[in-house]
Image (cartoon, rainbow, N blue to C red):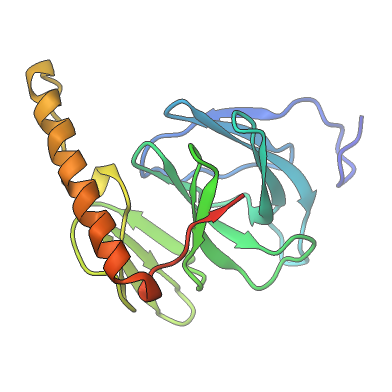
Length: 197
């Protein structure tokens, strides 16, 4: 069986992603597993400048995402999200960075392309060409240069393995989510909208 670029297709890769570690996908496509969810990437095309473009499906939800994505620089965050470089179906330009909630099948466009993503105390998204920069911070207000991650890792760090602390952590996260919901409700015009796939 031949794939779209003339290679004999032997198998699709299976990748287990790690938080904050960029993942790239080869021409065969891949299924990427992350915290109990999966995203399946199927080869669609290759633009003149190289790199592969894939359609994406969330097989556990039986949802296909309404855009294609480059097979480079997938960055997984928290237990729910992946940051991808997306394009409209049947195109390869313009590129827009999108955050996808792979557990619920929702996504939000950042309305700009960020070619470089680094994860440390905060997530820094930069475009090396126009020098625009956005941060996903532990806490912050949603506006032109800052956005907030809707869950987990960056709100605040909890790397505690003792079971005795887990109910307290769950309560703190619930309070944090409620405060975030109130913040989002108050500032709807500045927030990238989550859309259903």
